[in-house]
Length: 243
Ligand code: GLP
Image (cartoon, rainbow, N blue to C red; front, side, top):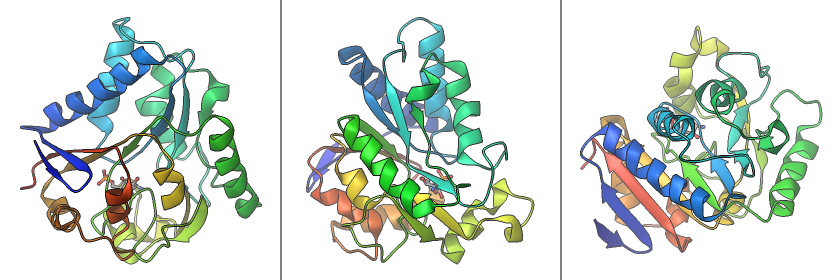
C-alpha cells in the first residue's frame, strides 16, 4: 500500500482478494452504522464484491434492514425488466438476496418521461438521506465514473449524458448488438459522487491499465473524470491485474 496525493492504494493479489477487501470495508461500515447510506455501482468489476456481501448476509454477519442504497446510474430507454438494465443487475446480484427494504433502494429511472426532473429529485433524495456514507465505484476504460464521460464538468449533479462510442463498445457484451446499446444514460454527477463521505474504487484487469496509469499520474483534468477523486479526502483504490 502506498499513498499518492489523497488516494489510498491497495494492491490485491487476485480478483477475489480485491472483492473481499472491498466487502470488508463495506461490512465494517454497516456494523458501525446500521443505517448506512450506500452508493452502489454496476459493471463486471463488482460482481464478486456483491457475492461477498450476500454471503455475509446469509451467514447472519450483517443486516441491511436499516440501510439505504443509491445506485450511480442507469441507461435511458430500457425497462427495469430488461436484463441489461442496471435495475435488473442490482436485483439479481444483490437486492433479491438481502433484507434491504424496497423503499430504501434507489436506482435512477431511465424510463421516465421527465428525466431532468428525475435527475434533480434523485440528488434531493440523496441529500435528504444525509448524503452517501460510502460509495462504490468502478472505472471505464476512458476514465468515466458512473457514466460521467470525459469532458463532464466536475460541478454537475445527477444528469443525463450521451455515451461515448468507446463506452457503448465496452458495454455491448451485455446486449445483442451494438445497435441495442443505449445512446444515453442518467448518472449521478461528479459533484454528487464527491459529496459521498467515503469512496472505494475498484480497478481490475488489463483493459483498465491506461485508466489506472492516468489516475496514478495525479493529474486532475475534466478530460479524465476519475481524476476528480484526487480532490476527495477519503478514497481507497483497490486494484488487481494492473501495475
Ligand atoms: C459502466 C458503468 C460504470 C462502471 C464502468 C466499468 O459503463 N456505468 O459504473 O464502473 O462502466 O464497468 P466494468 O466493471 O464492467 O468494466
